[in-house]
Structure formats: structure tokens, C-alpha cells
Length: 245
Image (cartoon, rainbow, N blue to C red; front, top):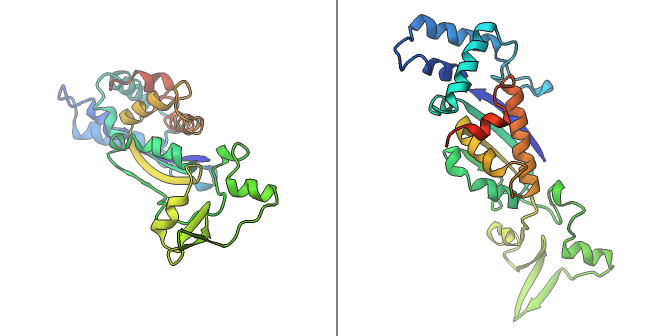
């Protein structure tokens, strides 16, 4: 499984929001904020896996704004809602993917995953987490030297061998039939965007100290690590746990 933070957006907007309640924002100050954030924000560098918009070489002026933003934003969470994170996850097993999908509302439904209807999965394909932990029936039969036929007859119907079982003949290439045999251990890929405040909720529910599936907890912890690095250490695990919900 791989977790990649693609980009961080909206830090400048979040800082700007601090100056509005007391009417201390001017257009000149707004430009100054945006220029400071832009000057310290990296462009996407695929070779070095640097997310677009991550904070680098933070100036003293920007440091002061960021200290105030994350101090007050933990309580006044609308400010931190301006900060958006984009992640791509490769090969988390489908069961854990479904558990993550339980938070789709927190993502404003901005999540697209590998479809079990449109994508094809191979015989015995499973995520890294399950490799060596489970053996499918087909794998066990192969180890025992037991061969299974390409077709079988059941109640007058002919079934053709598919991935992890048999499919009614004539429908062996039908995606809606094939997906019925896929196991929850299959690797699933997905991309999502999430507001920082909503990611804090997900982290609270799915972190290493919780009761989620181990691979999902690992994925969420990797997301927290990547966010910490991309925000110059401002978004800590303590901050994620302390952001009001």
C-alpha cells in the first residue's frame, strides 16, 4: 500500500480569514500574505515526492501568521476549513477502503475509487496486508495438487470458472456477475480531497490507537505524517486531536 499527499491548498486563504472579523484586512495585506505563502510553497516535484503547495523555507513573518492561525484555528475551525488536502492511495484492501468510505460525507463526497464493476481483478489478487495471512480456496487446492474443472453442472445449469469461483455460462464476461466473486482482500486505489478539519475527525476515528483495521490505521497515520511534513510541522497529531468537531 502507498499513500501520497499530492497538494495542499488554501493556506493563504486561511491566514487572510484571520484579519476579517476585526476589519483589519486590506487589499495590500492580502497580497502580502499571498506572496509570502507562494514564496514558501513548493511546486510539485514528482521525483522527490514533494506535494504542490507544501511549506518550505518559512519566513519570520509567515511563521508568525501560521502560529496564530493554528493556535486559533483549532477552536475557530472555519479558518482551517479553507485548507484542503489531496491524497492518492494505492492498493489498500477493499474492506478497509469501504471503512474509509464511511467518512465520504467528511470529504464532501470528493472520493473516487477503483470500481469492482468496471475494473478487472486477477485470480488470488490481494493487498500486501493480506499476503501470507490468508490462502484462498483456489490457492489451497493448488497446493494440495487438486485440479478443478473449467466448467461444472449445477441444477441443470453450466457454470464457467472465474476469479475465486464459477459464473453462469454465457455471463462469464459480465462485469456484474464477475464482481460477485471478488473478495474484500483485493487491492483498491482511490483519490480524495478533504478539508483539514474533516481530516482531523478521520484521524481521531482511525488512528493507530483506535480499533480500525491495521492497514487502514497505517494508511491514516501515513496521511498524518505527510501532512505534518507538508505544513512545516504545524499540523501535528496533537493539533488533529484537538481541533474542535
